[in-house]
Length: 280
Image (cartoon, rainbow, N blue to C red):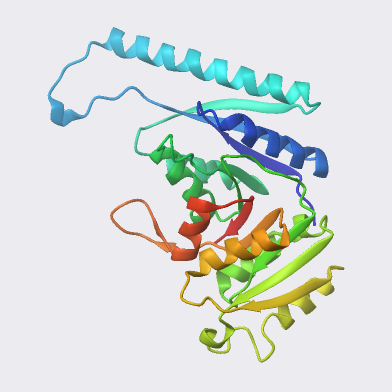
């Protein structure tokens, strides 16, 4: 198994360059094709405002947006060229409330999509929805890059969060190409007694056996949450072992906003210290 086709989300935020660095590192590591897509909002006036804007004004707004997108994508292309990685760059016009669905549709044609954790100083709602949709709606895994950047890609040490669920199983298998490049894999089971047998009599042992058949040796550890959320325990363990990658299932269901995520997933999106591969 390998990664041969990677997509990275591009935007105007200052954290974008670090996301591209991570994507380039992976593309180099796997000799993969790398594409970058920027979603650009169509000029739009909500009907409720009752304001008429002349067509030529909307056209100029569209031209300005296209020019800005071209600048961003050219900078990404140059960043790739400097690193010795050819990046296929493009933009797509999208309705203002359709960013997440548009990116998920794009991501379905790739082995992996790379999206970014939102910098709390930027408060990018579209970025949050795109990051969630990348693994919740695409049918493909997504690699979320912290806004501070990635330390080592491909990773050398990985932490696989395991609770025996369908989502966790999907994530562990989707991560095999990355896990195969590591020097150490740790399987973490949080509060195994509360999982009602989903992880077997020896928590994590069956997953370790599966990974062993793929040539990977994994250490299994269990941890008590002690009243903390599972996401906080995962983050703490990842920090303790010096992990370069966290692998976990992504959970969520429809609510008033595009997605309301499970507690552990939301913790990773908000506080992730290292890249996280999530699948649903």
